[in-house]
Amino acid sequence: MKKSFILIGTIISSLLASQIAFASNYTVQKGDTLWGISKKYNTTVETLKQMNHLTSNLIFPGQILKVNEKEDTYVVKAGDTLSKIAKQFNMTVNVLLKMNPEITNPNFIKVGQTIRLSESVPAPVQKQATSSQKKVNKQSTTKPETVSSSNQKVSKHSPVSTVSTTPSENSTKAENSSLADRVIQIGEKYLGAKYLYGASPSRTDAFDCSSFTMRVFSEAGISLPRSSAAQSQVGTPVSLNQLQKGDIVFFDTDFNGTINHVGIYAGNDQILNVSTSKGVSYVSIDSSYWKERLVKAVRVIN
Image (cartoon, rainbow, N blue to C red):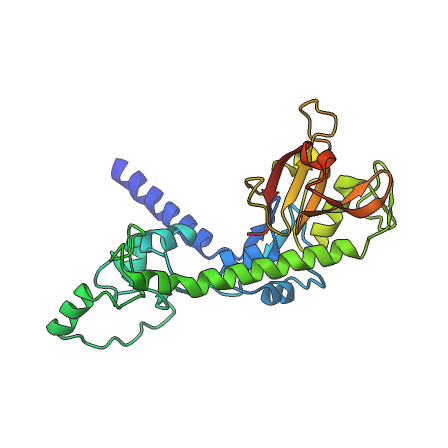
């Protein structure tokens, strides 16, 4: 009887894991962007918009998005391991190995290699390698696509490892830079709008500091909470001497230990914000007033 219960439990667990592995929905979290979600699920922003009938990049926490039509395969990227891929799709390494018999060494996979996530996908035809070829592959320092299960490159000091990750890193930096430029462009179209304490983020003729940042980033597809204090808790904290365009900066204007003002770093020591006297405008972070009141910065574009 005990064995029967164990067997039934195992079957139920396997069925649940299978359902989770191929789940096609994602619930939007604070700080999420369509771009970030697209990278997580190995798709594109345009594909997500088409699948969810979105007319803009605006998404909200709690919103349920369809993230894939049918996720049967995964293409290995730099830094991937079988363990990492299995965890991403709520599977086990053994299940992946069973569906990918061409993987003879679970400790090594290649960038660009297609991993099957479903039994319905036919296994690729593999070329037989000679023993001499295997030996060369083991010792070669000119094979940039090999990664190990511990997320370590085969040769930690191989200059080729840098080459293998550079295109991906450059692509990410370029996309982040493009999104940051977009954020500033959105903010600039409201230059001159008046200040109104407690203004609704839905208004475009008047803002307070946090309704402005909330509005601007929402138009760029990034969800932020309403208050400046709450906004300071999302994203990734960054050093004040390493600010990048699109970072959100926070101030304690009363010197009482409480964040009460927020703006968007626009590069070249300029902050796009909403002040009581000038409304939506630029100010210099190097001015004595703002410099001594700057207390924190976070990055939500990553």
